[in-house]
Length: 330
Image (cartoon, rainbow, N blue to C red):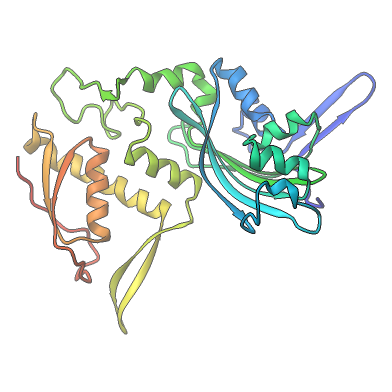
């Protein structure tokens, strides 16, 4: 590749130097992970002292396999490209989200990757190949009081017949501060898939907006939205109707914008509902279906509320840009 790399390795008979152009706030352990070249899974496992498992989210291969096995026809004149996303998991928690585009022209690599199911980094390890590594970009997500936030890198890793462009997102940088404690902070709250209910009777005491906020539980709608807002912030999430000067129009909303609206609305609900909900954790919502109802429901889920919905099947164009009031039963 002709792309300029942010990482540069140099060595002599007696010394080795690795230089990475990173933002000032990037720590030493983060620089190690950002410089990983096909061995991120191994490095994370060593750091956390836990297994790191690969969970495939999607894989789209083009052209579609003409026949099986694909390694029988993959070549430089017939390359196969796969777009894929995987989650690197440890103790039930997402450690990293990797989105890749892989171009394969080697039958041997195609056999390992497409037929035997090896992950990208494991293909290089299986073939005992030292790949060419180009670090393209490093991006930091917003942080609160110098804590949390996401860390993202885009890089190209390649060898003959196997070229991968990968974007990896670490959703929560506290991982690199607390290590195993970061994993256990969630595991302590999950017992046989049941949330441990706080004993102080304050329903809102363990929401993201309280002083005693806990980490989001894995694999809930709220945690999935939070992860996607960090991983693909500018990808369109939805489009909803608005009244424009020339009639009905549709406004596009990204994952990041939707997540921001949900958080803002949830903060307002936390204040408004504290005095009326008390010990009861169920709320009924009456509103027309559509985008704004999705904001309301996700905001309620952020507050760990069970929501019952009563809504007509057809959404109408909103008459006001503001989010609506809703009815509650308790």
